[in-house]
Image 1 (cartoon, one colour):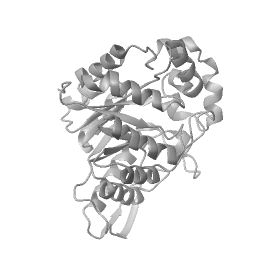
Image 2 (cartoon, rainbow, N blue to C red):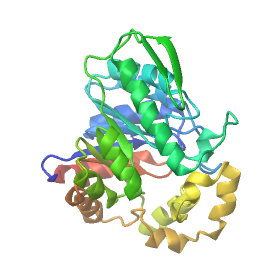
Image 3 (cartoon, rainbow, N blue to C red):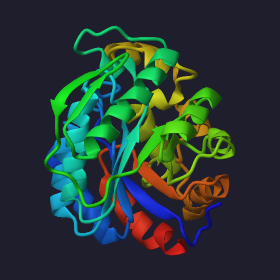
Length: 321
């Protein structure tokens, strides 16, 4: 179980809302402020058009590695199964880890149709995607060993491939899980756990032998008032109000824009996004995640004003940890 003394507090590089040069600058600023690590989202599309960006995460992470000195980096999370072959992601992650002066963590999950349909591939049902994820992780680990590798499996083929650029230390692979079935699978083939919000499934993962770093993202907005924060989240991150599995099944930003027409500002105010401007609320939310067993907790500041978050966390939140 984690304690407030050993938790690491991170900052989200939100690739759906910011361009690549801005994200690299935010990485540098986050290190100056005192955040412990950075986690970048991996998207081909933003959720809704208002967000307006979707740079290639591996370029952004390379820039962040070059711009920071000893900052831990993570991708939270990549779907290594459909849009990009796991053999290519083995190379991308090995290169990113080799560039980083700190630790690098590879977060993986079963993905969303929003990002994975772009090559015209079939979108399988979740049990098949989980099976594909397991095999993709196997392929990546084989290639990380550094020898000439061939793999002929159910979903992937690799022929006479070898990675020549490898890091001194291989990154742990943290698996995202929202349901008990995935949490059990994550304990079997993952090196860590990943969640958006303190998911109870971390207990299932631990009870099934899961070990390694445990990541939890908190989403919110630091602004001049709670009303301003609610309005910012409602404008820039309305999909936070969507229920169930919609987020993994809708194919385009246009479909998300249609779906979020049912979301109202009060849904945002009463939902999981942190819009209260009291520092104690942010501290308590981090502590709740720590108490649930997470040792890497990172904050996603929604909206264009990232400096408000940096100043607020530097003076009001990070000193408590």
